[in-house]
Amino acid sequence: MTIYDIAKELGVSPTTVSQALNGNTRVAAKTRARVTEFAMHNGFRRSEQARNFRLKRTFNIAIVVYNIDNDFWCGFVKAVEDALGEEYNVLLCNTEGNPEKEKKIFLNLMQRNVDGVIVQPASDEKKHFMDMVRNSIPVVLLEETEEPELSFVKGNDHLAAYRSTKVCIEQGYRKIAFLSIPPDCVGGREWIRGFKQAVAEEDCTGEVLYVKETTCEEVEKVFLPRVGEFPLVFCDTHLICMLLRVLFTHHVRIPEDLSLIAWSNKYFLSYMTPSISIISIPVEEIGRRAAGIILRNLNGEPHVEKTFIDETLILRESFQPSAGSPPAGVSGQ
Image (cartoon, rainbow, N blue to C red; front, side, top):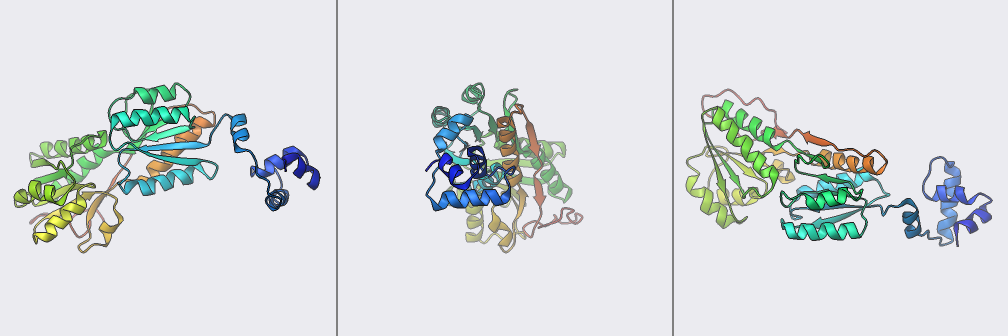
């Protein structure tokens, strides 16, 4: 059965049938329902390949991520899918932080004629991104770039780290640690830069403790011997579960012995006892903004956007002001 057969049976034009099957609102709702029901009942299957060839689109958008194990991506991918709408398919690719694998993925995506790519870069190299843009395929980075032809959307890691550290210093903390994996991505480096800037301005002691492997054993080896030195620790999202386990095992009390703030959106942190303070990353908003840039470029509005989105410090039970300081002024959730 073809569009022409449906048109003949229902007494409408082939154009009306095509528009109705595509959900075009210029066709009356009653007619759309009638056409759709008839097509389904009679086993009609339209040729997506022919449609895509005519429109010069595949309706596939790729999301290329650094580490698919990070639960950050659950909310992000859903936000992108919702913003793109039902017409688009989302392809999820994992580079495992390997720049060479990232290049191969981009070559494969270009050969498959994807309509756009949202990527968390595995390195500072941008040539393969630029190759895609110059082939009229929009690319949106999730890290900052000064490349004039590339768009990016990301949380303002530097400002969030700077402001959050300042709040803690105002609450009486003069010695602060930041527990982190080695900062391979730009965002990690910006977080550390903001942290260091804040402690330097206030003439406080701030130290970044690097954990090379995301295991409890490595966290214990790096942090436990230093736990008495720092009454407050920031911890990045990759290490927070391991740190909590180590602190529990060694009977380090939160917040009596150690105040703790996680740079993380892990949902369970708010349900723990004590609930864990966080710097919240606006995952859904980043996803919506990135998808919006892709769609605007595909819909004939070629342009570059460079967007920072604020991250939010949420103080919960794991943080208490240092002795003799005023109450914390940031509300919890």
